[in-house]
Image (cartoon, rainbow, N blue to C red):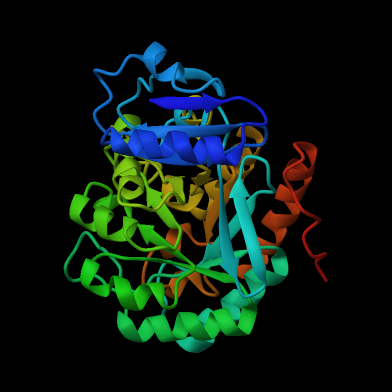
Amino acid sequence: MIVVMKVGSPAAEIERISKEFEDWGLSPEKIVGKHKVVIGLVGETASLDPLQIQEISPWIETVLRVEQPFKRASLEYRHGEYSEVIVNTPDGPVAVGQHHPVAVVAGPCSVENEAMIVETAKRVKAAGAKFLRGGAYKPRTSPYSFQGHGESALGLLAAAREASGLGIITEVMDAADLEKIVEVADVVQVGARNMQNFALLKKVGAQDKPVLLKRGMSCTIDEWLMAAEYIMAAGNPNVILCERGIRTFDGKYTRNTLDLSVLPVLRSLTHLPIMIDPSHGTGKSDYVPAMAAAAIAAGTDSLMIEVHPNPAKALSDGPQSLTPDKFDRLMQELSIIGKTVNRWPQAAVALA
């Protein structure tokens, strides 16, 4: 349930109303929009009469029920206003959201060594990326595949962060590793295989760093948004949703099926920012540019693109990785589309 306050409502009145809701056993959450303040009511609201609530103050404009099962994540909860996630990076804050330029995330699937990750960070930064992605801990289908270097790789990500000024996005697999990951990461990623690891979602939601939540490979949109709700219910409102392809019946030509229809669907359901990962979504580097361009045209807020200096020798996900030179060219191409839809900060660095 949300309580929409009138324009110009006094701060003291908003606080008084919030205190009254607390006395009722509810958890009021103040959401400050561009023009109005909305108070979200979390708790047992089924028996409450909206008309009765409206009578407690002349400054209440309207009272609405949130019909979706995902309360905090729903667009209704923010009264139709889309949220933004502000990420603090060494180069300054980066905003991810519908009213900001597309934020590009780039880097290798796994951190392999210091020279590789630092050089890749510098190259993708020069091309226009705002974040470096790199796995220290890697969930793999086979127990015999490379699982990442673990804690030692976090130090390499820290070195890349210092050398490049990029924000760091890396995945958490185990809540036991969360504390040391948040010391390095600017955004904590929950991968597709852990999207419904509810104990992990609660732990991630209890810390302050923004969270990138990847869609599970066989999960519905409702399940995805309910996973986001777990994080938000634990106290962290800064969630970015990442579509990375879902499993369908045809895996011969692409690794997954990249569901770009989630962009308009999610816009109608949630206020949360949206990222598209065409690298995992297709599994083949040749297909990444077309799907990245399509994602920008369809309205994505962010892109995640895998980049490796030598994909043929990558320890994981080489076939879907672009070389730094190909990434440079892709950023040039994407800048044309990005400017056309008014979602690009500036032209990518010109090629020599």
